[in-house]
Amino acid sequence: MTARTPAERLLPVDRDSLGVWLASRVSLWVIAAASGWMFVAQGQDVVPALDRWQQWDFWHYAGIAIHGYGGQPTGVPNEAFFPGFPALLWFGAELGLRHVTAGLIVSLLAGAVAAVALGRIGELEGGQRIGRLTVLVWAVSPSAVFLAAPYTESLFLACAFPAWLAARRQHWLAAGVLTALSCTVRVSGLFLAAAIAVQWLTTRREAIERSGQPWWSGLGWLFLPLVPLLAWSVYLESETGDWLAWLHAQAEGWDRHFSWPWTAFDTTWQAAYGGTQTPGFAWMFRAELVAMLVGVVLTAALLWWRRWGEATWVGLQVVAFGTSTWFFSVPRATLLWWPLWVTIALLAARRRWVLWAYLAVSVPLMSVWAAAYLTGRWAG
Image 1 (cartoon, one colour):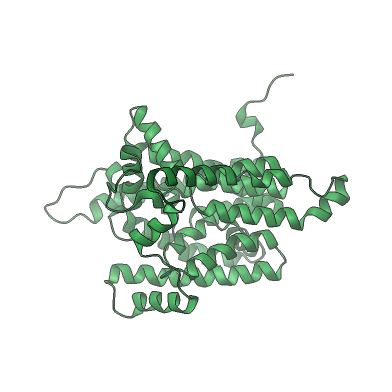
Image 2: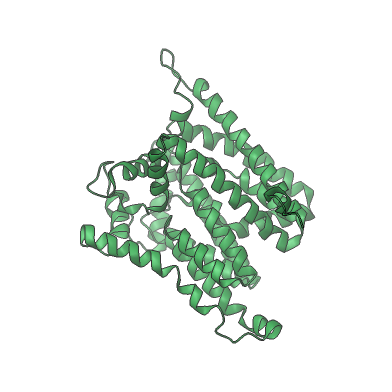
């Protein structure tokens, strides 16, 4: 028997997902190319194409890849950033790549993995068409520039989406390993671990009735995410004397402290509409408010539909954002909410006007968001 090639192992929904992913990357690179000359001031040189992607958090990732976690080479305590992505930037540099080039390659390849897994998640909910639509609405979502940028989103999702897919199929070893890998990239891995634990709990009866497995089958693998988290805490304690240095770095560098939800909302509202921010920052805080509203509604809907694992995944993030000093980076976090994109895909499949309305709003917003990021403006 002739062994199948990797391309032959792909399902039809996988090919669709990769096609959508690559086409959307072309769109973002067109925006990146245009932003170089459309927003250049008279008398200034056009910023080289790769350099346009070196914005905001990228400098922290690159700083860690160069200097490690000692001191504050980028002006903030870098312990706020988990080591998975900077480690790949360091590895790319060892191969002779610029950090930004390595980051863009990681995001491109990891995003392709995430797109395939997301397409399969969507297919589980409604077939190949839903899988394809799920990837489409995700890949052109308003903050999709962060899936292309040298940021952690694509790398995290290359672990998180397959982890959830494995959990849906009750492959708990794979789910545990992939969730553990996600915990090396972002703190969001903690929320993913909790969501998968809830999924395990709420599917026990079904698993026992279907296969006769003992009730504890797969339980041990759910503790795998604790391994990288414990290793990370041990390292931080040895370097800084603080087991939770990553959490305290958020407070020190970004003024993110616990706040009551109504206080966090008021602070964000004032930043958005109270005239305390420049216009460039104010519109982003308005986007934070919209994203939080989406998160609250989505969590309520998932609870109503008894989708306990997905509700845990989105709800824990909403609680974390809603009890911080202010809402911060919530639009970026929507990229991680696969239930949102599956829900939009299901609605679009039933009512075609939903898809056209979504694209009519989302694609221009994606373009504006990308242009803002690529020209150094605050883009969340």
